[in-house]
Length: 295
Image 1 (tube, rainbow, N blue to C red):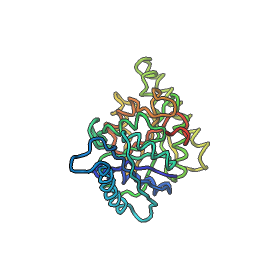
Image 2 (cartoon, one colour):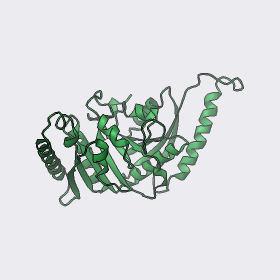
Image 3 (cartoon, rainbow, N blue to C red):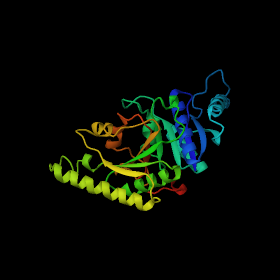
Image 4 (cartoon, helix red, strand yellow):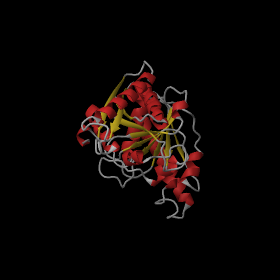
């Protein structure tokens, strides 16, 4: 398994690197630390034409050397510098080049409130990537947790739910971490406020929670730690906050039904979760992906 980290020499970049190390250690994966630079458009007058890219690349290599030195010796890691008009597109192309299974980025940067405060690059990735994207909340770099403690899979009934569940099951089994399944049916307007029947909504949620639990158990070894629960509340934020979280937890969510085939699109429920969560979030495309889908 391979992970690509979208790295910047910033606190958000350090958060992304820390999360990548945690995931790599959990999964036995390789880490590729990547810096995407803008191509030379307006060369400063004191730099000869053709030399600006070289200066940028030299500085980037210095940053990457510092990042590589901070990675623990038990993690296999490499670095790469490339140029692209779009940072997000550049990361997607780098993921294609190394056939990565996951892109990891830091959430700091302005936008949503809370621990994530997504910047434009992360927003673009969460609306375009054909491979899962893991986002590190602010402060991940300060955590002493070395590997993932538990995986929470927040799952509804919409298209792509089966693939999300399968991804969560495979991740948990490969990592050997407990799996917590969370039914989002009670939060879905399709079955909630629009129906106006609270008892029916909760009955459907209970049935959904049991179904996902049975499916997960059928795909995991006997005795593997897996449980299911239902989240409910006046708002998504309130419901998610009730779950209880610990350092080292990871939540997995699916891409919105609005996404293009084999591409991500961060839905409204996941976006609301980001406002209150302080654990990493992994967003999974609603369609199966492979290397041929990458640019």
